[in-house]
Image 1 (tube, rainbow, N blue to C red):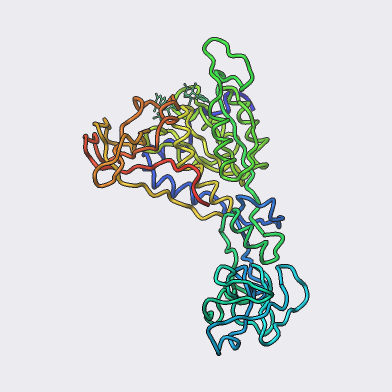
Image 2: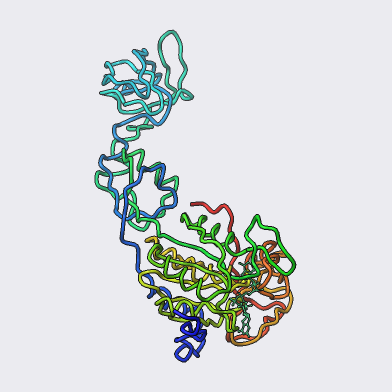
Length: 425
Ligand SMILES: Nc1nc2c(c(=O)[nH]1)N[C@H]1C(S)=C(S)[C@@H](COP(=O)(O)OP(=O)(O)OC[C@H]3O[C@@H](n4cnc5c(N)ncnc54)[C@H](O)[C@@H]3O)O[C@H]1N2
Ligand code: MOO
């Protein structure tokens, strides 16, 4: 096909003359995505971060058997009826892992260790600290309660209780629970196949030498890492030159290999922003490409065959925001994970944050202190540009200024999305 056959204009231009707001754009992207369905069974050790597809039930009640919660003496309450003082000869010992079925003789006690099976006829355990030992006998300071320090079989989990539900993201605590119940593997959704590429003649790959007016590719390493952080194994598809034909061929070649392709750059309106044209001529159907968002207005998404496509803007801060709002949701849907809207907290801006009506803006901010009511007091970092990741890297989070409001005045309340590192999971 000749050059003239590739249209630079986009078939959705007329329809999508309107700009979508962020929520509408998210809904449309969501509808484009086919939720995860293929599954695989994985050993627990290989399932970190994967999404459970089938529930797993307890095959046995837990604990498996009555056992001691303390190091001490197993006793029978019948031997405490005539006292105090209470003293009983020590007739033996039982430890965790002992295989015989121990039995407590009448009028005696047995040394017992944490996790050991409760001997037949014993109905309480007295911790060593509440006893004194002398000449083969244990003296007890007081009579125990019935069942004291005994973990009863089945008291935590009944047979068939759900241990992990579909949609659960596998993490250490679930691996521990499943392993404790004897499960060696778990059925999870297959990981979505995700390819990431950058576009632009001005980009040099990471190890390449940079010539005048060239840039290092920031977006690809950033997006690949964000996907890895979500438990994905994305494929690095490199950098595409600003060439519509190559782009079309590339899309032809790769569309069938992936569930989701994520690109950055070439989605704006200039003559070199050829992605929309190349995408259409490769058989792609564009759904939307303009969102009332700052940074990140040009965000293109659509489908090419069965592959969903997310074209993020080239400016790195805009690509970062675009991934947070659209990429994350797409990956969650394709991996079987419930979409988890991140809830903002209310905070106060210390100074004025200038904002023009029309686009919802995400502003890197740091927390300078807290108000007397405990709300974070925020200061903007940077000048609001979308080309630099520098402010973001020294921010404590991003503040949100809605499309329908103007400047945020000093002392005004606004939504704030804090970065949360090392969250419990
Ligand atoms: N006439 C208009 N021009 C622009 C508009 C507009 O509405 N009308 N929108 C602006 C906005 S907003 C954005 S955001 C950018 C988005 O542009 P593209 O997605 O087409 O991206 P490029 O033009 O390819 O690149 C923009 C900028 O980012 C640099 N870049 C690109 N890729 C990378 C990368 N992987 N790593 C680091 N830096 C990258 C590129 O060199 C450019 O400087 O368009 C505005 N223009
Ligand atoms: O979406 Mo662009 O960021 O605002 O530069």
